Image (cartoon, rainbow, N blue to C red; front, side, top):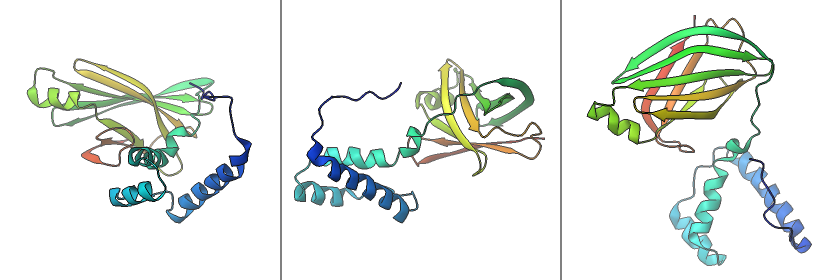
Length: 198
């Protein structure tokens, strides 16, 4: 959904301050190599008291800084060209992971990552309830974004848009799915699923 301006009001006297905030955000990204982490709560407590701000507000602000990449415009795949068969699977623990094909478009590729499990097994049912999150990594030259997915008893699938598009000859590529405890987290669960394409 496109962002809508929440109010028509704006006090022009603060425009220079807002511009300086943007300048400081850019400097913050440069100094941290775009990997700022999160300030210790002790710092936040001191800043909240010093600048008369609420601690939870500052926590929300610094939390938002960590998710900037998710605001990057998503490539909308257009001009479908072909399916590239992959037909790869990996069994790990009680879960079965598959990629059937890569959908090629003129401006992007789309991969559907599927997970199947036996809902009657107590080990897996607790995992499925945890709502973990997989991120796709291929290489620095590719931007991989999850666009949508869904799940029901014993099955989950997620679509990822990759840009620029993958080559039609995919031999040698590795698609690595890394599981995190939740979106926007840097805490991995330890599950890593690698598909080596031939």
